[in-house]
Amino acid sequence: MRYEEYAALYKNNLLDDVVPFWLKNSQDPQYGGYFTCLDTTGKVFDTDKFIWLQCRQVWCFSMLYNKVEQKQEWLDCAIQGAEFLKKHGRDAAGNWYFSLTRTGDPLIQPCNIFSDCFAAMAYGQLYQATGNEAYSKIATDTFHNILQRQENPKGQYSKAFPGTRPLQNFALPMILCNLVLEMETLLDKEVVETTISNGIRSVMDIFYQPSMGLILENITPDGEFSDSFEGRLINPGHGLEAMWFIMDLATRNNNQDLIIKAKDITLSILEYGWDKENGGIFYFLDVKGAPPQQLEWDQKLWWVHIETIISLLKGYLHTGDERCWEWFEKVHAYTWSHFPDAENGEWFGYLNRQGDPLLQLKGGKWKGCFHVPRGLYQGWNTLQQIAAKKESLSTQVS
Image (cartoon, rainbow, N blue to C red; front, top):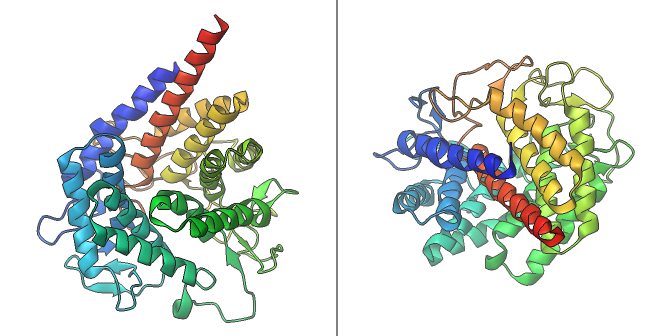
């Protein structure tokens, strides 16, 4: 398949399948916000509203409006979700809850800082679409609150006993690498540069272990290995997703060496995380080969595969390393033969090790309108850039 044909596949699946699925099935016309618990056909099976998935959908439709086409129905979808969240999503201190009832009553306290991360991302993107200063203020206030909480993100809700085995987790530094670019135009230049510098250092110099060629999910406060369930944990999808965030930061800073390093880490993690018996990428692994704590360790998840595709395509675009393209075609073939549901639309989220759907749902507590549409957009856009670059080089040669 040619680059242009791949690009068309990603574009068409995004605009003709995935986006209409969520637009039609997820909006709550009575109370606002979105239903994310959707069965295989898009029917709602639970009405609880999870803040980070609500915010991700606000971001998604705002992004589509800003970057693809200024469709009013996309903007309306984003605004109604944002207004629901504006009314119900935060506690008195401005921290975002984890989940709400359908009507907007809090269900779970603000125990998860990722609600805040995706709220900042959502309102920043929606501000770009609307120019509404109220959305800008929510985005910037939330971002600064994240920075204040980043050393102790769970705060009073942490289950860990203080001081016994303190660990720092990879997820927040990783997300900040992407979030800061999303919000760059709204933030003070010094805050942006400091956040970018700290994010790159954290991901590439602290959590990345050169001796392993892998990124650890948890390390000690001093950046050392912890020989424990948490310390031995490898989440290949997290590391692979983080590498395209780093490539975007490196592109912004015109740092080709950093792009090459991120590309090389992508290939190293993928080689390690690929199931050589059944295909696909494992969800969790233990770096010492011990039995993982997570019983779902051998499942194949939608987001892991689509995020890997983005990193491979960006690695190929920026470096021309043919290994990236070879792996892209391999991961693409697995992904597109297992996850998209041609009959009912959207993608399955959870496969067993052999590649069969474990759950028929299209959305739930953890899967919403985010990784698939974002990945399809990034894939479409990057494949177009690859095609244009190849065409330009061909013209120069001839």
